[in-house]
Length: 221
Length: 208
Image 1 (tube, each protein chain N blue to C red):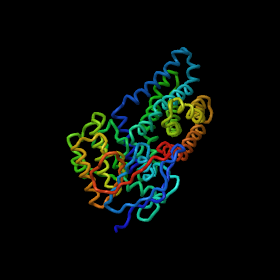
Image 2 (cartoon, each protein chain N blue to C red; image 1 turned 90 degrees about the vertical axis):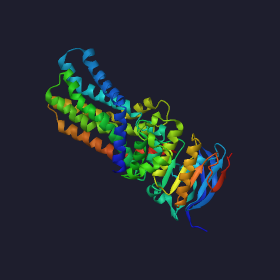
Image 3 (cartoon, each protein chain N blue to C red; image 1 turned 120 degrees about the vertical axis):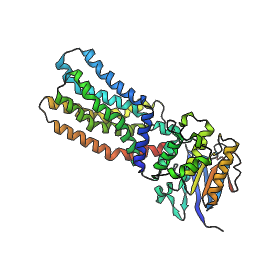
Image 4 (tube, chains in turn cyan, yellow; image 1 turned 30 degrees about the horizontal axis):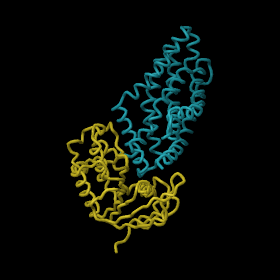
């Protein structure tokens, strides 16, 4: 097993041993999104129109909830030193950590979202489109959030700092993610929105691991 | 005189604007041990971290078999077994899982065949399946030392290895260290205690 696969496997095993951490994230997503129909009322047109934006915002906040522990736990127990000393690129370790984070947050959020979308009165095509945009867009949230988590490692009030750093960088993903579902409903070009989301994910994939690795080295000094 | 494997010359480090040490030079041959002594804040941990390239030295060189370790950092890191102040263990994983996971992170796919001997060396066999968070401080330190042994790396960098160890565990550590040195390994340990293993000593003094 390569170091990359070993790290993904270790992080997934840790989540499996402590499922409450992921359950809190998913519960937040469910509670936050279901509050909107309750607060706004049963006006079907209004709910359907805001659905993608609400679900995308809730997914973004839910993903951020779990990100402050992404590297902090390793920093606090000394395993970050072992990652820094691993004889393979730290950039791959950063990618592995973000990948494991996506598997336990982004992926379940994307799979859960269509069920919550029913409460907003979205039709079948919109529900599938919502899941597709979250599947393509949430890796960007994990990568950008991972960068913010690495940059705020060891800082006081790191959770708030992390949100302040990550949220503005996630705005393009949020706009095109929510916009894609709306485009489908209004006859716009859903494919183009999805392509931009994929491009944003690729840019994040190509840049953030290096920045995360640099931030982790700095934190290790 | 034996050929030096590790050569350190004119090493200087600065932390937070303060000079921690400077013009530090030493060399180690196969089977040699260097004990770092000095008061709190004298730079023992910083030196260990600089040798592991976790801290960037201000100036100086670190050569392994005549090659600058910064030229091939990944190969250099593969030659190091590290024990820091913190144990580097995951509380939710068992002792055995921690040890095997650490080896896999070093890119060693299968260490199962060597696991038993590492566990036996530190009397951890009966604790192998226990979650690390349920262990005492001494048991966690023994687990971290077992990880060092399991790594089979030529250079051990140890920060206060005897921390929290009882007398039998200290004896087990000495036995493991002597075995490592007898096999041609090198070790550098920062400590306030007498490790009880023959070797050279380097006294670091606090810079003002």
